[in-house]
Amino acid sequence: MDSSEVVYSKTERSVWMSFCTLFMAGLSCWFITLGLWIQTVFLLPWAILIPCFMNPLTIQVTGENLEARLGFGYLKKTIPLAEIKSVKAVDIPLGNRKQLWLCMNSRAVQIIHHDDEVLQLGSTEPEKIASFIEK
Image (cartoon, rainbow, N blue to C red; front, side, top):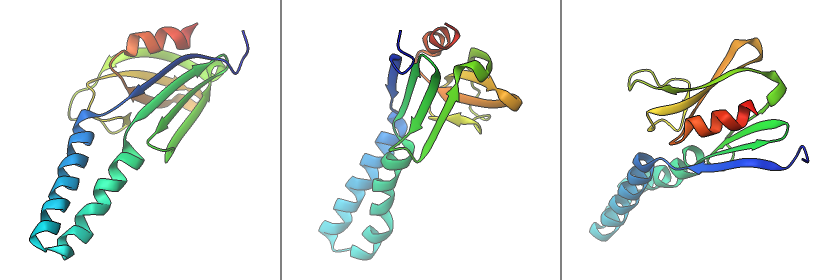
């Protein structure tokens, strides 16, 4: 197997962030029809920035690396598989989502790598991601 060959790839979207984006874009259009241009100037940029920087989360496992990218690459992390100490699927309580990428999923794959740094990637199938990382 080639070390750069992708063995697993998944793109997760946050339904909550997608809903917020659509709501803000719709509200901006409504403000425009009412002639309230000044409110649109403050609201419309958020409808553009949320999907660019926070949605979707793309997770790829290659022969050598785990790659995670949030949005268009604003947050990007590449971890060599050899440096991963442990990986497991976890449930994330609603109040403890500080280290979580893609915050609206209650399930995540928790990755502990060199220097005991913790990365939690929200996913609908964390067990499957963990199994590909462990191989």
